[in-house]
Image (cartoon, rainbow, N blue to C red):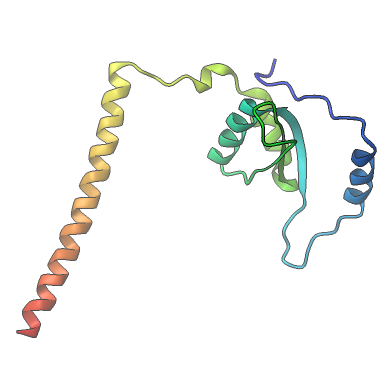
Length: 139
């Protein structure tokens, strides 16, 4: 069972008109694929799902019903990514959202940060050496 269940689309006449417009949609000259709807969700669920999809490299657009806390978001993704995006939305469970707070996980994150800092220090040293070498040539 999926963590988030989509809300039912409304039966407005606007939805029927937009469906007719979607049928007539053509790829634009730039080759950008059309965006397709993968579901309507409450605000918090929409935010979480958008982040999940962006984390796996899927472009996401959200259409909100209103700016309030009770807003409903419609998730839109490029047509070629729609099948995978639906799998991401429907097949991941809540355990994937819980961070690992074990001591070994903390040590792993600290090591990642230290490694990144080490790389930045090496880059900074190389730039300083280039600057110093450039100043020595001018004298």
